[in-house]
Length: 246
Image (cartoon, rainbow, N blue to C red; front, side, top):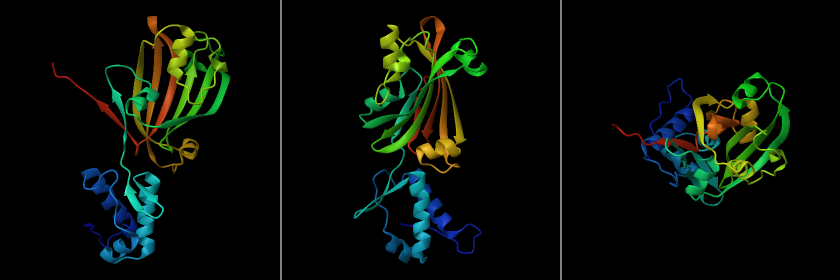
């Protein structure tokens, strides 16, 4: 494996090694599942200490781009979860099912809260009215990859606040209780740093990059049913779209 480092550079050597390995992943030279050289071999090739190599690898492990398997070695784990943009509206759970990925959903918080001005406007309810606040962590193949914060209009779905949402689809419950199909959604996408609170839940440093999807979901006649935020691990999720030139 060819890795160039400059020991006279102001950039720490471990950071140079991490940057070189990351670039190889971006370029496709290292792909998902590839095993990288062992720590002793990297030390010999680069003529650096074991501590320097280990620190470089730990940077990429924290980013989720490398994983260590005891007794086997260190392997590349590039982003492997796609979310399609445009066309049909899918829930995040539905996209995981379509990709045949094993996932688990854990409720962190489920409560009836009073709507402030922002939430009241998005759900089209009076300020102070109750709404269902639902906070869930979703793991894919054992790794936490998204934090979902839902705010649900209980006037359209009375009784939904009593449902157990561990491993249960919110969209399916909304359609089952209301007897109507979800019609559409309006979404915005931002690239942010995760911050302390959400970073703790997702096992990420506060400065880690993350995708934030802010979405309002509508029933027929443009009635808002849900106003939510989805925080996606940027090192595991990628967004896809198909565009047609007319």
